[in-house]
Length: 97
Image (cartoon, rainbow, N blue to C red; front, side, top):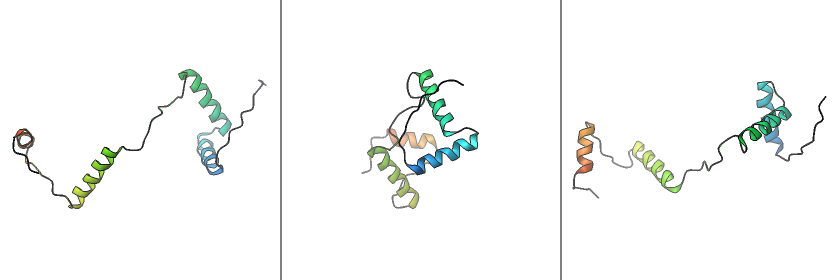
């Protein structure tokens, strides 16, 4: 048997249990999954996934709220019979405020 090193990782018990259940369903142990993560990290020479903020910014949150308000009928929105009609309206000098 190959020599092994021990890695101690602190995590919340519920997270550990959820991860173990997922990996058990895939037929691997949590230890196997952690070793896979380490191997992929070496292959990628970094994290094997994109690290980014998933929380929408203020502009996106405002747009989502506006879309919800339009769907509820709380805000009146224009509708067009065709793309050409919409384009003509968008390019016109008349703007409603």
